[in-house]
Image 1 (tube, each protein chain N blue to C red):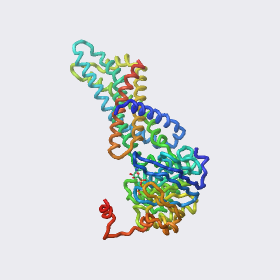
Image 2 (image 1 turned 90 degrees about the vertical axis):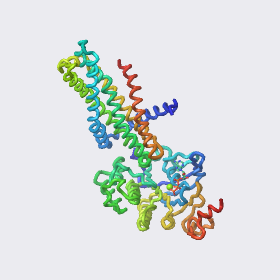
Image 3 (image 1 turned 60 degrees about the horizontal axis):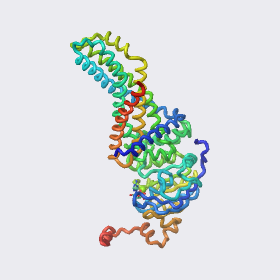
Image 4 (image 1 turned 120 degrees about the vertical axis):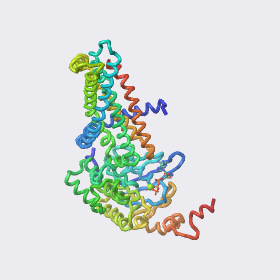
Length: 250
Length: 262
Ligand SMILES: Nc1ncnc2c1ncn2[C@@H]1O[C@H](COP(=O)(O)OP(=O)(O)OP(=O)(O)O)[C@@H](O)[C@H]1O
Ligand SMILES: [Mg+2]
């Protein structure tokens, strides 16, 4: 299942799909309604999930740090740790994993069933390349939506940390100090790095999920398998890319 | 890209030495035939003979193992063949876009290729739907349609493309006799009005024998006879005769005969 040639083939075909899709950029005006649709599905419906997830990640981070360093008078740095962790790692990675589960699975399921029930063939006979009408709008939508999701995740995570730091009795850190320290450590560069990562992960998830969907053959069981494969591949890819991008950006 | 299409000119189809296997199963065995521009060419044959696979080769969705299909002397597997010629196919299962309503299913091609402005698209689409008595299905989604309605939407979707080559995969199966006759009339009228080349896969004897210019009979991946409808009915080949005039014999059912031969 994990033979090298298959992995290389999957990577190659995904990259090609990505490049082919962008050759249809000139027809974007015709795809505008589809693009708006995708932005709505990806952005509006995923935003609350991302907010809830990162709120709890931020607050539990603050809780753990506060608890571990009880009595060492380390409290005032909680803001910087939660701040940087959210910006550089938790925000982008958790948002992308959420996107893989929420958006990637939906993309694979939709495209796989279109493939299996001959809809993709019908498009081809109409001389409408599936890359143009199915893949490109989704890629453009994720490019627009991903930074918004990541920024939401980061700020809500910060707020979660602040709320816990102020209200839990053994931490008892005023939010003004929390945010003052946070501001001192979180640089524009760090934020840009985080957003850059989120953007790359988002594009990777959508490309991989589109590719797996469009290469599905068979029936309902294969559609199910394709969805699982899309989500698992996306998450592994996110973690893998995360390590190497982090290393390159540091 | 769409500017140098030869609008309105029907195209010729040449199938040359076409073979295709799935694994060890030979589905098409060295098929040869030519369809002249503007002809109605009907392919008949028992279920599983390879008719749908044949059509998918003609439209370039499947690659042959050997041989080729030429549309206007251009190989169909080259991209520019599909870009320069308008080819439409009515799929056996319809293959409608399930996330688009009936109107958008029909309008998609016209919009994507900028064929007409908004008002003209609406006129064309409603005209095509009315022709197939689908006027009140315009806002429905494919899963909300009956099998026969889906088939008719698929036909309407192919017609609005104003193609030069039209492939129908069993257009009259699932339809009542009157609607079947209507479809046959539509196929013939569309050919007369627009000179489109039509290839029709069908089990419908009435359709094959009344509107076609020539009929091919396909069995187990081979074409066993190509002839005009009149000559086909007079054919001496026992396979042709038993296919065209199957006798329902309750005293000696076919499936029993098969069991006895074992
Ligand atoms: N994807 C595939 N993989 C393997 N075999 C296939 C595939 N598609 C079709 N076949 C086989 O090819 C043969 C011909 O199929 P085809 O769909 O062309 O039949 P048909 O003549 O259209 O029959 P019907 O009149 O029932 O539609 C069948 O035996 C079928 O099992
Ligand atoms: Mg068939």
